[in-house]
Image (cartoon, rainbow, N blue to C red; front, side, top):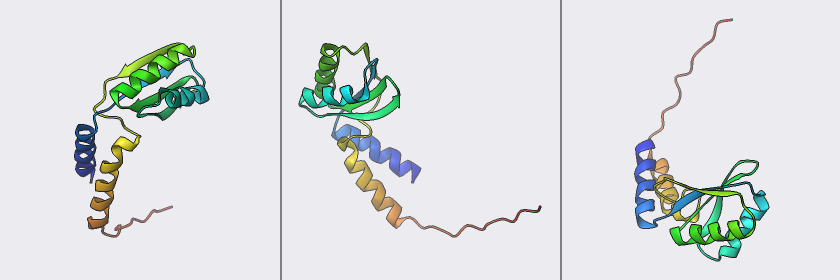
Length: 117
């Protein structure tokens, strides 16, 4: 299943090329507003920590959101070296493929173990 997940995510990234960037020094809600104002394929992908939010989407969408972030006073946007726009709708094909793999995977009951006190 791990290999299937990796292959599915790789294929989704090839089919729907995307990228990610870390936005620093901006409120979470403002990053979401910047993504909406970009009016393109870009979304908040992860809330890493206060003041650090990852955005992801098409290269064009991330570039537009980056410009909006800067207009809105964001301190820094750091492009991330990734193979896709993870945690976005661009990965839906991978999710669907992994669901099918999980549904068809043989599972065995755990052999269990006993503890001695």
